[in-house]
Amino acid sequence: MWNTKGVPLKIVLLVIGMLFLVSQLGSVQFWRRVDDATTPGKEHAGLTRREAVAAAVAKVEGYFDRHGYAGGHLSLVRAAPIDGQVQWWCKGCKHWQVELRRREERFCLAVTEDFSAFSSGCSRWHTRAIRPPATLVAAARPGHVQRPAGRGGLVLQRRIGRTADLYVLDVTTGRLRRLTRTERHESSPVWSPDRRRLAFTVNPGASELDVYTMRADGGDVVRVTSSAGPDQEPTWLPDGRLAYSSVRDGIGSIYVDDKRVLKKTSSVEWSPSGKAIAFSAALEFGFDVWLTDAKTRKRWNLTAALHEDAYNPRWSPDGTRIAFATAQAVYVMRADGSARRRVVTQPHDLALSWSPDGTRVAWVGNTERNFGIHVTNVTSGRTVRLTSHEGDHAPDWR
Image (cartoon, rainbow, N blue to C red; front, side, top):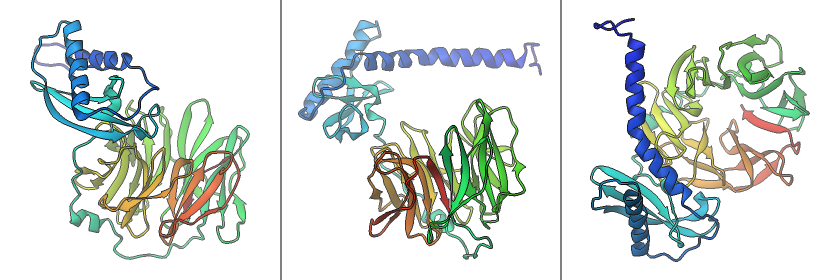
């Protein structure tokens, strides 16, 4: 394809891309040098707001002076204390987040008592969350509840040695039924809406990953994807179509029917009605749980005020609540992001699944003391351990 002057379009696009990259180098260098000048490990509470702002101004202006940037007055946009749980080096302490403006540029720093300034310190500081419209939240609920035809149960992957196989656990009796017995690594199993089939990821070796489906009894195995890029983490739409995560185009995205529907996204799940989508993505500063209209793709940040990265949102069966995980806890909130509560504070992986009746959440312990699958009642907080095998992961409960 050629432009009107005979210059290849690919060359034109390459030049434009290079110019954009060069335009960003200044800010990239700024943040790298600010981060390199820190001394983590000794921070604790004690700075006043005035001291924090002065330290942030000195850090930014000092950089400008040292590197020959034109001077200019820095104005304060906002400053607020934040607990140190968002920084691994500052557990339980407090430091200040300060956002400064210089002409049209903004600089967001976290300032500690020894006046170190971290550009990543404001990664969990967003503007006030804007609630999604009530019509979309209501539309996420299923129109009517259909009783699935299959037997269901809690499907999981169990790793023994170098590979994993898939099993179904009867939560009531504790009986474990094995579905696969292969030399491949099979993971991330999820029930279809009618419980007749399972989708899962297969790793035959090296870095290759593809999505497969099979009947609930382990038969009729069908390969769904065969692209060069890794395809994994399948999830079903309420209408029976299959979505999955892929980096086949160099960007982590969600595909349905081999077409990309969401970019820079992971951990996606459609609401029971199919009209709303919950997903985790780093679209602003850190990972948040987002709600998007499945038709218009307009989105709302549900965890903007949470000072932790948020992953793996999962809809309750009635579409009124969303569970999600952070490195510190498992939370449940209303579908509009309000009424957020911690329900699990034990060490855990990020995998979650609701019970069919919407009263409990299944999760995975990841320490020697709590290996295995657990379920927690979201009202009482009572937790029951279902399995204790170190290799049990990725529960899906239907």
